Length: 116
Image 1 (tube, one colour):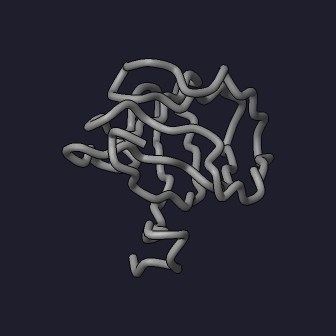
Image 2 (cartoon, one colour):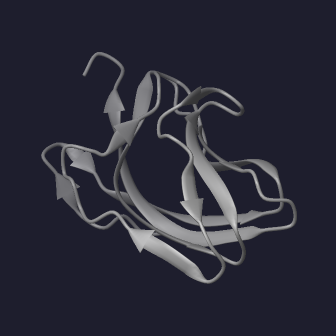
C-alpha cells in the first residue's frame, strides 16, 4: 500500500488486518533498527473472540485482551504520538483467541528509530 503522509520525518504507512482462526498473525514485518508505532486502527470481528496486539509473534503484549462479539468492532481514532509500539526490530503481531473466528480491518503506523 502507498504511504499516507509524512509525520515529522516519519512516513505514515498502512497495513491490512486479516486474521483467520486462532493464534498469531503478523501484521507488519520487523524492521531492523526500528520500532513499529501504531497511530490508528479499525478492527471488526466475525465472531466472539479476544484479540491482543503483541511485539513479536507470541511475544510481549502491547494491549490487554480486547473483547469483540460477532459483527462488531472499534476504531481507535488517530494518535500521532502512537497508541502503542513494538520493541526494536520486532514484528507487530495480532493474537486471536476465538477458535475459527476471523478478524479484519486496517491500521496506520510509522517506523521510528530504536533510539526514539
